[in-house]
Amino acid sequence: MTSTVNRRYRPPAPLGGRPGSRAALRRRNLTALAFLAPALVILGAFVAWPMLSALRLSFTDASGFGQEEFVGIDNYVTAFTDVDVRDAMLNTLWYTVLFTPVAVVVALLLALALNHPRLPFRSFFRTALFLPFVASLAVAALAWSYLIDPQVGLLNHWLSGAGIRLGNVLEDPVLAMPAVALVAVWKNFGFYLVIFLAGLQDIPGSLYEAARVDGAGPWARFTNITLPLLSNTLAFVLIFAMIAALQAFDQIYVMTGGGPYGHTQTIVMEIYQSGFRRLEVGFASALSYVLLAVTLLLSIVQFVFFGRREKDAQ
Image (cartoon, rainbow, N blue to C red):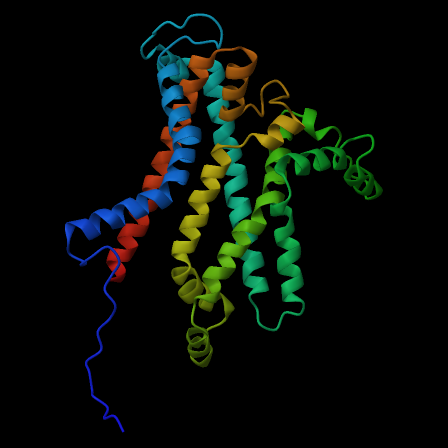
């Protein structure tokens, strides 16, 4: 009978040699680069190169045809002095004010309701409320255009039974922007709802039980427990919704085309019309980078906010 010899376990040698050797490090880097190469090629071809090309065009008077001439920062100066661009920026700001708080508040209230453990059919309601986000915004805008049509729209038909007539909302300079913002709220609040639900489910239930024992009511529990612990999620959703509002285009293009009389002409609509209708490609590129700068600024604010929150938590 062969005696058993206790031997110390030795893990298998790592592939490519010793962990600290230059050959092993080089092989690991080459392996990682080989896996990253397809994604880097796609990002370079479809993201980096178009961005660099647009940056170059923003300093020219390019029209997409013929020769290009270098004009320096003239396009950027025009972007901040042109009356139409100024109106488009104000319309974009008005759209952001209409869309962001409504979408966030609706999503938060519904998330609070759907997070209640005793609510029946919670899964059904969550799925049903998230479904509009899955649909294309252009398709949703087209459907809503027919719903609020003054001649054949079901919404006007139902409201007329109650003695309310909206008329042609999309041709009204006052109501056109709220109408397109409402479509965006209906389309996107389900996504924000899911994010709020994830944040609510991370809050320990023991905190609410302790608050109930201490006699705290629903409003006190919301202001002292839910809102403070949901602040990171709320900040993320707010900034995300603002960035989405700055890029509004689909439903405006389908429903109003920037009208009536330019009252729904946002900055992205101005970029589209400058580049593809008036063939001012250089000016459209400059406007695109102005929008990129604003979006980047909001993203930096988000990173700074979360960075400070993490430092305070530590």
